[in-house]
Length: 183
Image 1 (tube, helix red, strand yellow):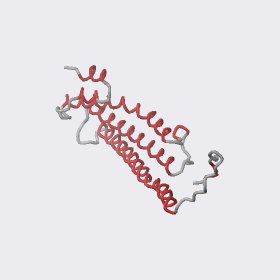
Image 2: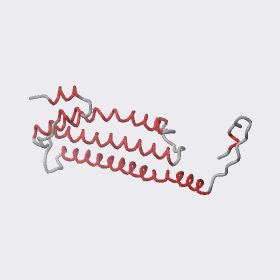
Image 3: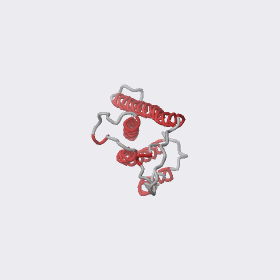
């Protein structure tokens, strides 16, 4: 700690204080903990790529089934369900990717060449980026709930799920009332 940066108190000059070796090691150790966030960067990136690949595979499987290359045919509600699930995978992958890029910029290298809307300089920047991406996911949750309702009607999903309560968890009560309260 350097006392030359501090103004003297009532005409007295404080003595110079030299940081101890332990203090220097503590600072180096704390600075090195940012490397631990490499795990978060890698994990969220791998999760994003995995979800994108799975969404792509599901898309091609659905198209192949529609073209008659599958063992069974799909009804329109089933096709809709498949594609809503694919969109869900892509939206979650986008959130994971934004988190991965943000963690990398915060803890590894802020000079990463990314689009302007992905540039992160602080934790609050990352939070704002996630807030910008996450609302696009909320309407998709409503779509998933409606798809589950259709799947239940067709016998493809378990009947024990309380869908209005599920939708209310996402503060989407108008959706729960209008779609799920059908006889």
